Image (cartoon, rainbow, N blue to C red; front, top):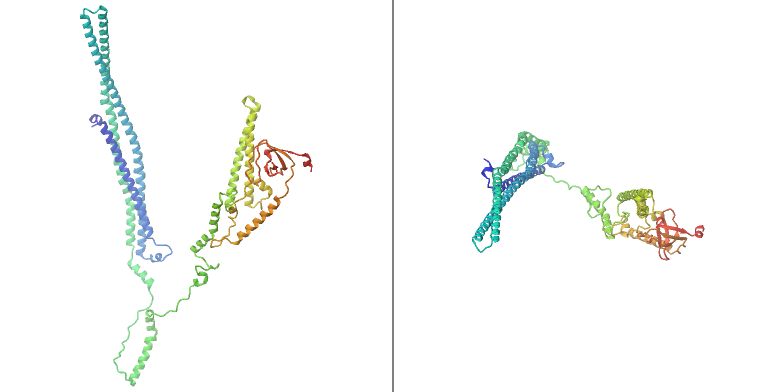
Length: 602
């Protein structure tokens, strides 16, 4: 029984059947996958159910679970938890042993099927090509035979005609011979192609197709066997956990058998036993006797009078009856929370212990100014460069991170400068390798970048030192190194850390007072800004272009000549003036300073 011999002409049907087999396998994989999801969901529901009925710690329920029946119920819940775990094991084993394995096998099966049917189509195309060649040679042979017959008839007609010249007859004869030769060649070609086609066709139907179909048959049989093995695994996965599930059920049965009704009854007695004895019989009082007071009656009355106190006030009767008599108890004292501090809307006493919920609520209320602070930052615009909107520790981390990044960039630029310098030295020693002057611009650009990065680093290091407490305040030199230049923080940002907000959300007077102090300080600084301008002590020429983007700096263009009004004090900055209205600081390394001798001596 072979598909190659029995189904040699069913190529398309076999292709459909094998595709159907793969679809069935994928459907089985989907079935197992849904089963694993059901097992997981069932296990999750069982765990939630077990957790739901577990007694809560430090509650009255936990005290009630001292009875054997309740302990058995707890054991049942624990066993159900383990039972749920076995369903999780079923899901995991099915996923790892069936789903993953079959999914990988399906991919391999698709590749193998594709390869086999590709070989089959290739063989079909080859035999079709051979058939087309055979048909072409056959038509050519037929055409040549017909043309040879026509040429022979034409020659015979010309030969029989006495009016035709001998040259025309000879020409017709030669043409007939050529046609006959072409027909013979076509015949030989047709015969050769026919033999070749028959050989190829025999190989196709008896060798190629049987081999390909045999591979497809083996592939399909392996798929069927693999699916059967997966079904066995499906059952084995369930069977493997049956003993453990049986142990869980045995645990439930054992817990049920451990229930002792007598013990539970004894526990009830111990829990609710009062220790009192039940009341005795009540004596009969006869009201039908006439109310005649005789001596005997008086004696009887006296005896009854002596007996009744024994009934009412005797220790035995009183001990028997008082537990069943309801007495009017005095009203309970007012609770401690009745003080004004316990009123929800009243002020809270600092000595009063707060509940956790109220404590958290108070924490939330105390964090309200911070929330307002962030809102003010959002209104104020972008985050300031010195991270003054952050708390001190977070600000320190941000500044340290920024300093580290700048140091890395400086090291990178310095490495690049060293590399350019080495290359320039090589060019100087070997001029044929390059022009050393061509690297001057690049070297100056790298040096300029290093200077900028160092200035930035100094600025952030000053802020970092201020945060860490190394510097009490930023003096004039630190402000120059940090920019003078860095624009002052927006009012909303500066006031962020100083916001004072009352519980109802309104600002207190402290903020307005601080604002007034800042305004006075600003006016005081403005008085010094109205002083006469400093005289020029020399001139300078800009070596590079500098864009003064920060406050206190001035922009210069390469080659521009300006006046020097204050030389470098050791902080790397020189104060210059362009005209009476434009002056500011530029990096000393960006300009070439030429001081007047008289001004320098003075």
